[in-house]
Length: 264
Image 1 (cartoon, rainbow, N blue to C red):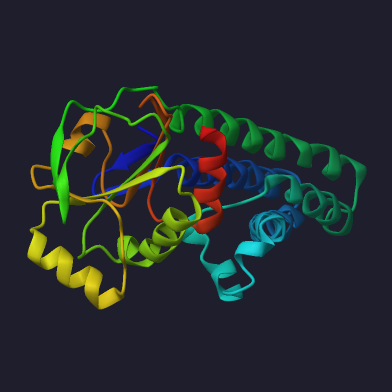
Image 2 (tube, one colour):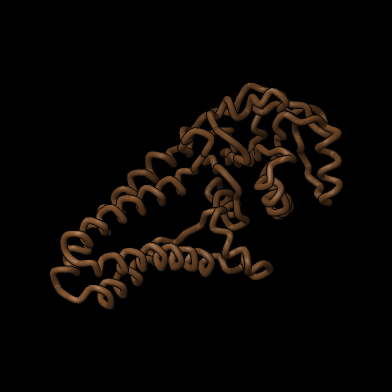
């Protein structure tokens, strides 16, 4: 769900779509370079590097309020977050400046369109989310009574699957903790995977994290129910418990806010 598994590697739908689109583009540009003009080599490199940089810059500019306190996070492209409309000026400028003839510029449209088609199709297929109901599962909670996940509580829910040994989980936890405080009308459930209470409590205390609902899924039943692979995973549920979005991998503060807004 929302991910592609290639052996030990797990790619989110967005990352898989980017890789697939870039791969198709480079194949097409390579064919044009070998059969039409070697200028397509520099052109394609400029488009890939410049396009990804522009898309990331567009995302940062659109969500600049989330980057003011930590501008270096703009380089954290592994979190995802790209605004692809910003690629258009890069395509136009590179085509005008690096390709010299009308014939070359006309042929340049082919790999660009092919890449866009592959990216769109891969993203739609890999990112599709089934509106699954929550599992009929009651989990023990830290410093609180057990929680039945099948009882949504009449408000949107964010479920984070995590573990203390997972570096991306540790990096995203402060953002999730801050989001929990900023959205009191949303229930946050931090479902630890396969660890005991003592180790989890020690980790949270060492990090200065105060979370309302820390649950223990020692049998790792929640990811089996939703069909997810790897951690961290952040699940966004409607107020009736139906799954709205599953985010694979480390999640950024602006992505949390965007997905929560879609739940209302």
